[in-house]
Length: 170
Image (cartoon, rainbow, N blue to C red; front, side, top):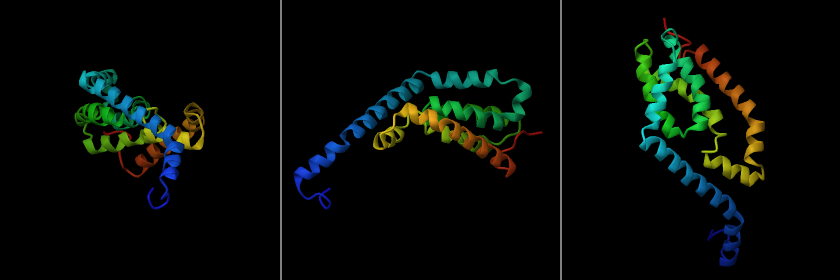
């Protein structure tokens, strides 16, 4: 600021220009922190992850990497990355070891949902980018969701083809 805008009045104008975007991002960061704290502090993440594992039938166990990849799409949208990767993922990885899958394979599969995660209202940078582009978040989500889903499917298919994680274990 000092180099590009040496005059204090010019600096104030530049800060005022971006104040709306900054306030929105700060609000989202605080809200996401509260949401993550509530999920983690109350044990809700543990309970949710155990329920996810409980609804997976025994016969689907060998498909845990694929199931994790598919679950990562909606779960990382509705949860923060911290809640998903530190709460749900360890339970999925632990249960997958009983079927012969390595935890690293489950971890790799969990990254498939990241293109959809970036559309989440819990991602402050998305608010900032939408604000700077003068685009409503809902309009951005409506337009981008199909492309993010297709990207996730391509990632998942490519990962299975190249052996990053298996479709199933025998």
